[in-house]
Length: 332
Image (cartoon, rainbow, N blue to C red; front, side, top):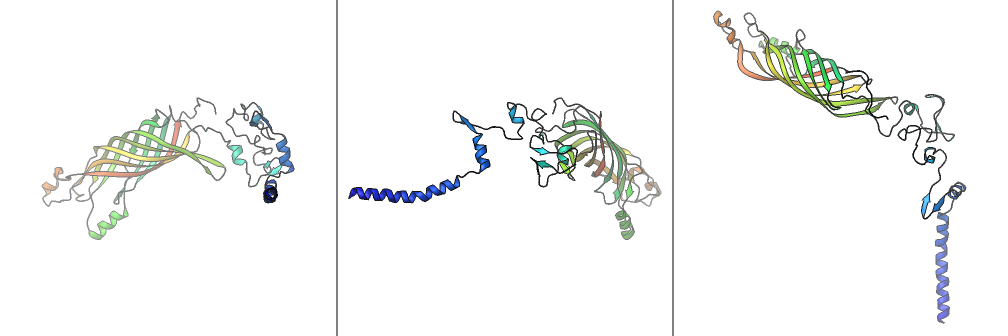
């Protein structure tokens, strides 16, 4: 009796396990291509070894030679890509089949390297920057300037240099100043600049690149600049112009700013820079006198109050690196 119960139990377990075994076999089926690929695989001492597949030419050279550039260039032919006879000629294929959305123009013109070199080295080169600037924060007079800067890069990210600004004959009173004077019959004391010079230090914390119109790779960098120097300024006589006239005086000035550069070649770039020139300034005295002797006293023309002036200027120009050529210390 017990024997029959045991046999019935075994039969029941067998019937239950049959569907599970069938499902497992269905999940483990192999196609003809997979069976042929599996036949090429061998195992040695428990470790799986893969045979090189078609197109993996770099893996057959003992793992030391990948492509023709010492392992750092991503060769399209090593990936099974057919680039055609020339740039942009024919449709790209992979193992005889067209590649969807494939366009090898950028890859052919700009090979992909595992470790990219800096596009333009700065260390040991001079950076000449001619530019034109326009003041942004003075509503009554616009100070325009021609600027020239020259910097020498001690390292790739740090440089020292000088800059020069020419303002004379470029100042322009704004329409706001004219409208206020005409509407309220009041004038606002304003100043004009002659020229200035600075000793600066530049730090380049960021640089990179981006794709442009799918066919160009543009490189850029951003810098911070700061320093000190001087500037020559004088008030424009508007309170009592019949008697008053002023001479240019030198003031100590400081400057801080931020700029960005876009490289056109390895020695030529365009840039924009926002710089704030800070200096103490004295304006024309607002008080007028009826006595001719007091009106002629030049000690009464200038106000005793010292105003801290910020001349925020937007400058745009070109950046020229000298010498124009350089050599990398290490190959790609």
